[in-house]
Length: 375
Image 1 (spheres, rainbow, N blue to C red):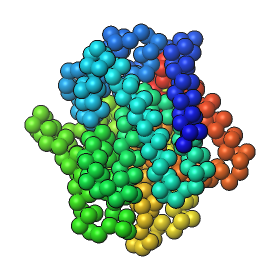
Image 2: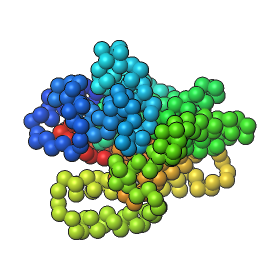
Image 3: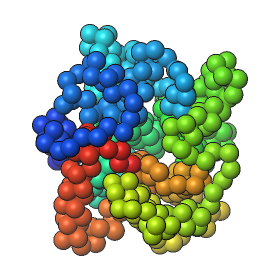
Image 4: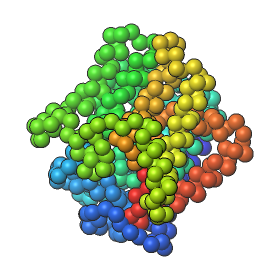
């Protein structure tokens, strides 16, 4: 555990150096509105921690939902609002501290979860380490919901594995108030062979209740309980009125690669496709290896986590794009577990992957801090 925390601290410090001291030496081009909101709280060299969605979380925390901001779930901005008084009313610092605290607590809880899932201490360390250096893990340290969801998902798994069901129920409510994919946690509950059906139904209601509370609020404010879905197209240019299947998405990206001019957007499209393909391959490979596709037998939490991970990976592609997938795979636990296992077959390959991830992590962090959206 000590080595894992030391690694987390080093990544945290390195990220601060990259954003605050290094990114200023590179050209900036801010592709998002309301940057003045960030500058009203902190100096420009610190504002890179709140770029893009971070601005909206701060605005929601201070002023409530406006426009199409209902696309963002309420728990994170609510926590920012509730804790801002500790920092003299500075919402930026409040959000950053929440993310950083969630990051470190999440590292601790996930290390324990991996051990509960049967990973040796060495495998648990390698898995957490690979997760921390994953190229888009700088989102854990930014004003985004990534680290809060990272913590809550790990906490829910730990409580499930240790049989603390009332605490799990409450944690599931919070999980699904943090991000919409929290509503799919019951998939993991369903595959827990140690629970009877009454407990499975009871625990599943926690996740449904969280989204239900937000939907109830949206009905009162907009008349549409699923407005968080409708609003997505105004922020992410996603197709939300019909489904697009995976072969169609690959075909669209093939057209991009063969017809579009080379630019930063082209580079991001390549990353989106590569990150999705890597996660998809790893999950398919281990699904076959572990015989998880026999859906109806050999239930376990690991199997449930696999199906949860696969569903969360495929869900965004139904909107016709791999947009933001490099960020979304950051919160797909089975991918991280199996990627670490696959790379660990050879110590040289694992070390090489860590080095390559760190290089890409540094480049993407600098780009993000300078207003280039990489996710």
